[in-house]
Length: 473
Ligand code: SF4
Ligand code: SF4
Image: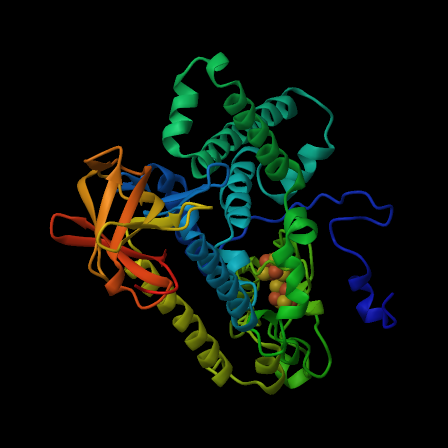
């Protein structure tokens, strides 16, 4: 329990009442510079999010996260289980990016980029304003008995919500199982894809539940990133902040009176109009300071700027600033910390790009057959037997492949085939004998390098061990 009365708001969250029941939030429709900007950003992000699984580069889906078949595409680059280290590295960079970004820029990600906020505030909430009206009308509608108007509005709203949830569910599955598979499920009779059909409707139900009922609780209760804020933010992080120095001044906030000189009277710039609270989708009062419920949606910034203009005061009473900026009345500056974090992120990104660039499209592995030693053939020719595995990560067949020993003089003999055709996105396995004259070998267990060639062009190389007698002849 908070000891100071001013801190009592921290003992509870705005969306749950004293009895522990849900307190429904009816935020006022935001309007202003930041809301317009966020609308444009969300149009771009939604278009990208909804279209990405259906865009292909060289036959590869732009983004694919098929955990079941362990197939991943990032920006059209296919990642095989063999490339899993790159997926892990990409994810690590993503996590570092989000953490570093949060330490410096607070929850900007939540307000501007997170799909939960974008779908909630820019899709579902807008539909709600369109059908039910603004805050006051929504409250009235909720209280009024079930008459024709309420039934019509509720049926219309929830039908549209369900339809959009269905679309989101399909797109979500297109990221998980692939757009081709999804289209196959949709266009085939239900009994051929019972599992897929159940999956689509299960996720539709989940999204419908989240956006029609659970809403801001995702950010407040469920989201692990939201929970991390407490440890990631410090007094230098940029957050949506109320300038309490200016807002409270000497005598504190006070209602606006016409023709008053607030500065001379020592009144704060805050006119206690409550508009910042009215628009907040998580129901908090940002004037208490930063709180875990704040998703940095900027609605209170717009609302307060509007009131500042109305009362002929400078804008920015609620603005992007750090606690330190507000306390010391300093403008935002690029600090050493911001520079250092940006450099770390830059290095990680360069490492990832370099690994992606040098990554071979064909992967070869040679494994000695377990339990087999070596054979000494006529003319002191040492022979080892191997199984090999070739992976074609490209979307084109690669024909007429051959193997050569690059590090030593010797021969590779294919077993059971004379022609190597590696089909697109396929794995080919076989057996070979590798023969090297004993005189070429210095050690009884020597590393040899094998090249995979198409014509004269070396596609990739791999290494393996070659066994020979300890005592050379
Ligand atoms: S306090 Fe302001 S920025 Fe934070 S969630 Fe509420 S309206 Fe959005
Ligand atoms: S909108 Fe601005 S002026 Fe109005 S109560 Fe909030 S901080 Fe004060």
